[in-house]
Image (cartoon, rainbow, N blue to C red; front, side, top):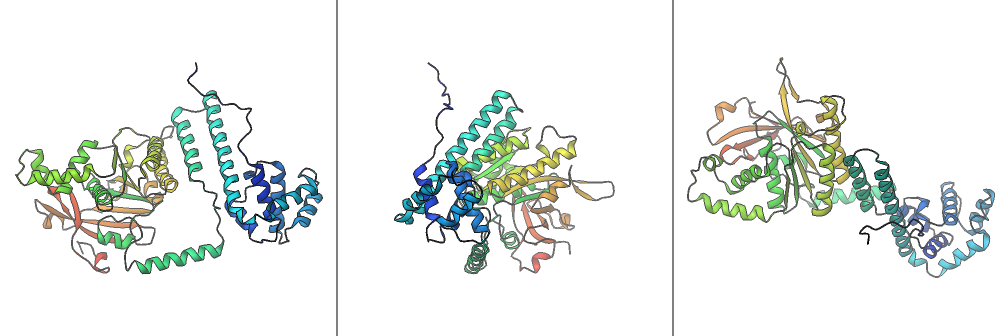
Length: 455
């Protein structure tokens, strides 16, 4: 007996003729907002209707509405007749029957729309699956690209809710007023995810869905520590799931660092086996908090941006991940690129598209390099900074050596680019070396936060 399930292509696709007829009939009735309700729910796509008669009638309804003409059984009949489609659409008797079907049940329009949109999505699912099967049989492209394309189509189908892409200006204005009111009610609070650094949150309004944030620094300047501190704040203080893709460090190494950071235990002492009695309780407390968190780490090396996007997509679907971190950009690849610069351009655009597709903030770390003239550049590709919604430069201040101690050092986080125009601003930080942890240097006013350590 076969274990697979063959698809019977002779079966009639999912549809509900009665609900389709009722929806058409509602729009022929005196209720004037029926047409706008249908257009919004179906995104004005007549293919929501399975019956070709209903598609032709609905198309004419939209054409009459766009022309500013009234829509009723007479005008629709006349328009269909002028296009020689009246008989094809069922004729006058069918239009009358549709109107009669909805006359006493017009309040059920939303329910009928829900039914036909559900059937429409099932037909789209069949089409997506059929196209995938066809490509597999035809051996079109490599398996990674095929799976990525299939998962992207399925995610788009899952996210489809029938709402139109274009909103009326009245609705947009209303939403803007709601946002403004929410800002006022926050009393200075932020609208995005908190990073745990108050001054940084104040300048950026937090991390927002769809944002691609680049944190760049020279090697060993603390970019991984800063990113993981943000991760620790989100998973422990906010209680939200986070996905980390570490192409450089192993998951074990990252967790060891987080244990020391959260538990305030000297990392150097652990490496040298010189732990104090008080370190063990703090480590156990930190381990309990991290074990109960919603942190997901993938430390696969040599990962392509396509593979990462596929894995991130599943993280969001299965675990509800609200933040994604990638460490670091130059370690990800994109097969088929002409050269390394072009490859990193594709990697950068992959991060950008991933943030928009999944609607979560994506923090990407990047290395910096210095040319012979002393100019600092993003290593490998300018596109990294150009594509990013936010570009944060973590650097040592001029007074680094003077004010550094074995336990701590001053650091600066420059907001070179930020979506809300908070650019050219310096956030003064203190790096606690023993805990691999960043904290605010002190509490600053908004004006003081613009003055770096070295001024």
